[in-house]
Length: 259
Image (tube, rainbow, N blue to C red; front, side, top):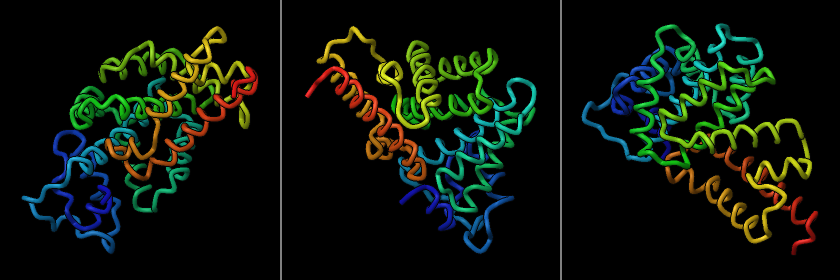
């Protein structure tokens, strides 16, 4: 059972506490259809499973921090608002879930948003799972590129977020380069892009290439990510990332004449 199903079953009061719980509470209170939930009539002693708790933390953190990054340069552009809407539509979120995501985004771009508290709680709730943190940062990188450019303020914000989550800055830069490589090659990456996507260079041996490929597949395997707490609604992003990795590997294999 996903965290969202639990909420619709009326067991919201629960769920997180802290800044993430407060943001979710505000988002649900104003946006959740009364016909679909018994919000407010929950059992105060109800406890959800650990996976559902992580899913709720991931969802609320992703969209609120996305709002924060959108405003980091002092204003929220139309392209950044559109990007947030596109992510929600791309995930095929139900109408109620989209409303909650939009409210979280709006809270993230508000003056009172406390980034440090949100990141601290997300790291705690996610049990410091590197795969989840990586997917979280990949989504934020996509948001930062909403207007087609990663400016200095956005770049510094991403580095700060990565440091708060105890994520390698070197790997963050690799993720940024990988996104840039996939974003400017709409359908099929170039051979140069393919190497960037896999995080290797042209001098990498076939054995090292295969090792890097398998490592990336493991990091982005949709089922593994969901098992670690990725909301099921975001599995589509993991599947697309996996396909990008496979396409890049197949292109290099063909260019090298590998079997």
